[in-house]
Amino acid sequence: MIKKQSTALLIRASILTGAVSILTACGIDAPKAEIAYAEASIHAAQNMEASSYAAAELERAKNQLKQSKSEVKDDNNERALRLAKESAATAELAQAKAENGKAKLAESQMQESLKIENSHLK
Amino acid sequence: MKILTVKKLLTPVLIATFATGCADLQKPQSFLDAETAYKTAASDPVVQKYSADQLEKANKTLQSSAKAKSKEDLTSIAYIGNTQIDTAIQMASAKQAMQNSKDLLAKQEKLAAAAVIAEQGQAQQNLLAMQANEAEREILLAFGQIEFVSGTSNLVPGAAAGIDMLAGYMSKFKAKEVTIAGHTDSSGSSKSNKKLSQERAESIRNVLITKGVDKNRITAVGYGESQPIAENKSSAGRQKNRRIEITFK
Image (cartoon, rainbow over all chains, first blue to last red; front, side, top):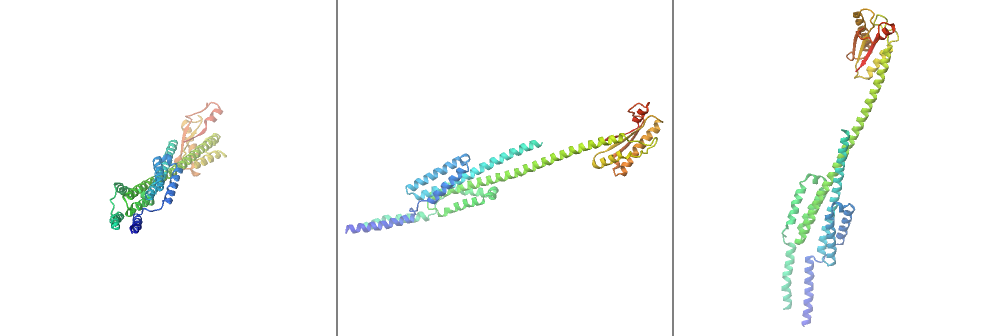
């Protein structure tokens, strides 16, 4: 009798725990797509010479990605998802900073060249 | 009894779970900062012009806070939104710099083209000056041979070649002016010589006018015997003194 009661108790507890898990959304899958996207964004930033123009952002994006992967291992997929998204956003910022740095450099070189040409004409 | 205990324990957990999902979460400072940053960026005309799409992306991220289930979610959304706003600003700045470079390049090309034109203009002027010098030498040479019927201002036949050359020159080089100076030898009175030299210079001036040269560009002067270039004692010297001199300016 006691055994039957214990089994019933366990079943009910399991059902309730499952319900709690669903309601709190703790059971999401590992954010593989988001991690892959963050990796691709970091790769793109590196190709754009972000290490020269946005070293801090590039490093932060890498760390966020690393932490995201680590959270996946610990089954903290919610945290992993947040970090993967943050990593991608940071990598995109690194790309934009690299692009801006290069564009500004080109502009200043153009200004310098124009200045030289002007002085030749005078 | 035991079931009741478990139910008693789990009921508050369930309530708490629902409460967490639905509660109006208090926005962390980082989220409020992101909202302010968004407003600032959205009012920047450069960002509006060059990275409206990226700004909209940031806006959607911030709006997704309505679905946030936890403070961690809100903090993460704030971070991503803020980063996307920074990205929008950087992208706008990059595109502005690219546009500036394009404008500078156009300016440089314009300058280079103007320099080429100026060089070509200078070369053309140099060429014209050379041509003018050459023409002037030929005219002076021709006028060195010019002769009048003795004691008159009538040109001997065939003497018109130099005048034709001078008319052609004056027509080509519109800015040029010419002075025609008549000189005689010392035969006869100085008064009559001055008159004769003036008439000879005038006769050439008149021919030029009939050929279309503006009269204001031609000055005729008669110096008579006052400016000899050779002795008047010999016939050769007197011949040298009977002359027409042309000056260009």
